[in-house]
Length: 485
Image (cartoon, rainbow, N blue to C red; front, side, top):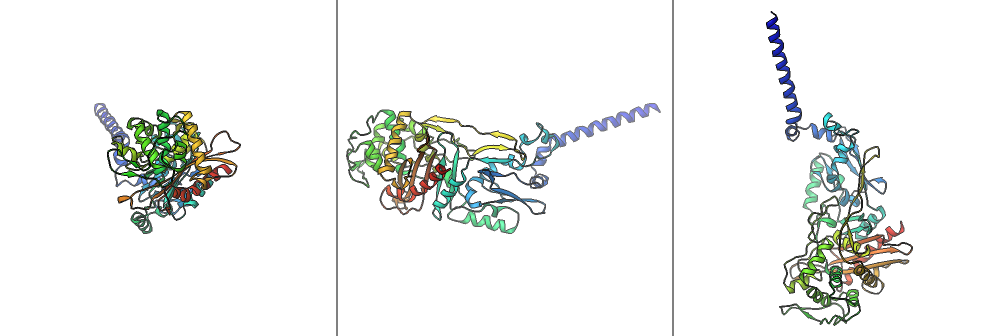
């Protein structure tokens, strides 16, 4: 009898071990496949079973959560949705997440392990911490100024603090209300179809994911390359530039929209944006030195994250001399995001170094305990400090007595560069109006803000002056908002 009991006990032990092994296999080894199975709704239900953490601007949340009482209980809400859509993106039960809602989803949804009181606790218990906060670098007044400035026009604004890389404004127009994509009802699907079918593309973040020909604002880069390479050593010396300028190896003649560009100095050519001078300078600098300069400024960088992914700005590295001449005035295949152009202006204002731009100051738990903090980081040295100082002089002249007068701010030093970019077949499209700038308060040691503005449907009138007329007032409003604070 004892033998049969022993055998039964051994069998029970074997069965118990097999049960434990199978439970471990299901709970640990096979768990990811069950989690990813479309038929498993437990993760989705848990994800929306608690309020989502907030995205914060200027100390105040610009997002929220609404209890619907339904199975996917909490829906995302947005305060001033169109104003902050290029920053927040959307969080939709049907269509997923975008922009910061996507990049910081772990913190906002409570899934990030660093939100748990003990390391790996949530992974062990399969629990979810309360959603954390994402504190942005956005300057609320600057964001509002940029949004109001663009109004009903298509375009974008990016503003950066030169000394740190903190992004102070990120606006894209037209915009949309991301709250329309929250929930699971038929209205959400209709909103999605309408937004994606709109030819104005309101969900496109033009500030970081749309590239434009930068036009004459790119002359800042060409001037930096000419000074750093020693092609130009005196800002006021004659440049021996013809007007018109025949592109090398062609019969195509490049002209100017202003007078007195023949043999103009770099200072005059920059102030009044002489195409012929800068096209010839680009050829004289040469492809190798131009490529080195644009790379240092950040062109062709496919790795930039803020933490949102940023479309790479383009400067071709295989060009003939005629193409190089056009590329040196921001045409041909040269293209840039507004953020990239703000980085160029910030590099001039910041002594020549390019700071890594960033949008998130820090993340924190729901109780306010810091999780991650972002610090200032230098990406690269775009130019010598002496070159940056000369460019600051020339950009200041553009605002003080050139095409950028509409950006002037009483009591502050403002530097700028206008631009009008041709595009379309045979340059038939309405030119894009550009303005890049920086501003420094009279009582401060360094510039507080660098801005880039592009207006797609500007009322272009004459050369670069449309940039001064359409884009410069927007930049001025953004700079004033930062300086006033």
